[in-house]
Image: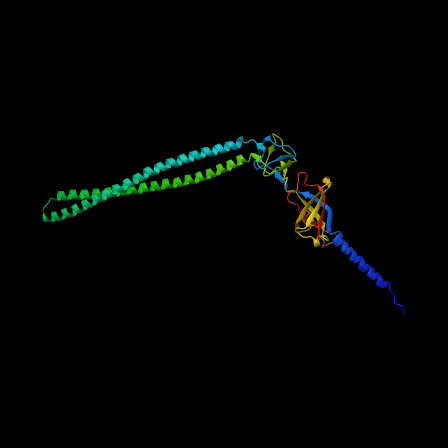
Length: 338
């Protein structure tokens, strides 16, 4: 019975076809490509940090600026007044501290004098105590009169009272000195708070001059002279001229063989005559749909499988001129995966 060779030929043909496709896929077309890709940049919002009326606007739409260039000036009259008020309060407080320091020096001198007076009173008390004891013995022997003894006792009582008076004056002076020290500490604390307030006032004053945080191209101006602006208002957008990259949204079925560092050919629709080169920089931590306002919920209802796309960041090679590249432009990228 002859053997039917058709199935064998079919298998061989399919094998050859699959091998040919694989060879073509890996050798002839070793790329993963997508047109779902766009130029991106880290745009910075130009916003005021203080409220006020705009006095000057020193830029125009689509103008190149350098880092530190003055963009907007807010009327600073109120802010300067706050600084001057703070400086005046500091001068008053420092003058008060100097006055208290002088009072403290006077009080310390009084305390030292009181201590010296106590020492003198103690010496008098010791002398009168000895005199009274000696005269008491002589009275017993009849050597002196009782009037002399009475005079000695009076001197003793006077010396004792004088010592107690001096001790009271010393204690009162010490209390006054402590009170002055406390007032000085309070004044120094107030001075510290005033210095901090002045620093904040100076910072607020500096914020009335809005400068460019980096070099780039400024656009989408939405501020005019005389306009009242507040913190959070967007006055313009600043796009860095050297920080443009590509965000390519590849299908999840395409990223299996893609790796960081692989070379990329980039075609910009607006510059169709030029091909740029770059490398894969990073992969998003989730598919683009996960970052949407309403992420998909597949746990309920009918399910329809949809191929997700994963954002891939592609950076241009060093030295690439990005002068005419603008965020938002469409691109086509080809990642060499083999």
